[in-house]
Image (cartoon, helix red, strand yellow):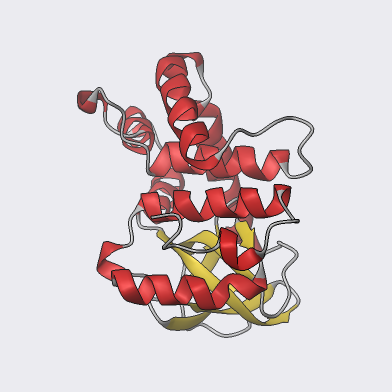
Amino acid sequence: MISAFRNRWKPCEERLADIRKGLETLFRFASDTRNAGLLEEARSYYGERVGRTFEDDSDYIQRTNSFLEWFIFDFMPLSWEQGIIFKSFAESRESTASPAEKEILSALAGHTHSLFVVKERRGKVVKVRDIIHRKTGYITTDDILEPDDLLESRIIEMDGACFFSYTHCLHPKAALRSVRKEIKRKGRKYITPDFFLKLAEMQLRWRRSRNIALERIYSFKRNA
C-alpha cells in the first residue's frame, strides 16, 4: 500500500510528467508487433467482459487507454510462461535502463488500483477517498475532476507524492452507494481485476443506455 497518500496540497508536476512518459513507453511496447498475438487475445477477452469500443465513441481514447493499462498490468495470457506485459517489459529493460528509468519502473510496479471519491480540488491537487482501502489522501493530477466524482484509477507513488495513472473510468456519482455495498460484501481482500472489469462494463452500459434506470445497471445481484 502506498505510503505517501497523506501528503498535502503541494503539487509535483515534474514527476507527473515522468510518470506519464513512462506509461507512454509502456503503451508503445504493449502495442508493438512482438505482442500482436497477446494483444489480440486480450482485446477479445476484454471486449467480451466489458463491451466493444468503437472509434466514433465520444470516450474512445479514454477506453483504449483503460484497456491498455489493463493489458499491461492485469492481463494474464493463456501462455503463462510469457507472463504479463509489464513483467516482460521490465525484464527487457533490466540491463539497459538508466537509474531514472528504473525508478519509474519501480514506482509503476508498486501502483495501487482502486476506486476513489473526489473530496476537494485545489489547482493540480485533488483530495480523494479510497473507498476500498478506506484511506484519504492527495493526488497530483491534470485530469478534470470535481467534488463527489467517483472514479476507478491506479495510484503511483514517487518521491513522496502520488499520481493517477494515464487514464481513469468515471462512474455516475449516484452509483456510489451500490458500489460501496458490494465492496463491503466482498471484502477488500477479494477485490480482483475482474471486479474492475465488471464496473467498466456497467459504466459502458450506463453511457450507452441512459433510458435504463441507473440502479438496474449498477445492480451487482442482477449482474452476478
